[in-house]
Amino acid sequence: MNIRKDQHTNPLLVEGAKFYPQALVAISEFCRLVQNAWRETISQELRQLEKAMGVGLSAADIKPYTVPEKISKPIDGKWVVLGVQLIADDWQQLFYLEWNEGQGFGAVAQICFGTSAIAARARAAFERVAQKTYPVFGGDRDKDVFICPEISAPDMDRLTEVTRRVSRDWIRLWREVGGIGQFLDRNVKA
Image (cartoon, rainbow, N blue to C red):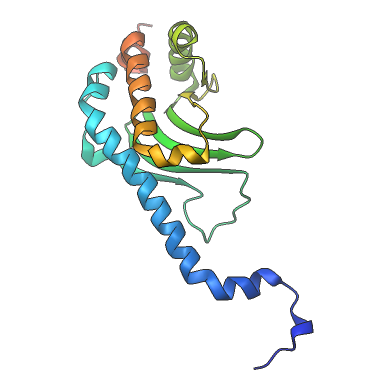
């Protein structure tokens, strides 16, 4: 079927038809490289993280973490993440790169909790420690705690160094806080 040039209504479709396979390969490879950098870093630091948190962790539990999960889902480009996660019954720990419209580009270590009570206890402990020693700290009192140093595109040449620095800062914070057990509902005295 021949379509006259003046009938094209969407230049993205025309350009996409030319480069879709190459773009998809590039995106897939980019995702693989970022997730591998996080996976390798967390695997290498896992014993230190385990000791600092006071819980058993396994490299087999390190899973990919991507938002959005699939390119077939609607993507607005305002907030995307790419990294790895460790999941337990009471918490989910995430290590990722984040692109957040209006807030920049960062490397994140984050823990999300199953209940707001756990999150509030953890947040209070992290606040006591992190504000003195780690300036880029945040989280939602009812949900999570995170660190997120800003990075730039040229930092990607040193991605392993970036992931290692963030994971080591995160481990140091866990060590200073005294581990996760004190926050979990099963360990809290009524």
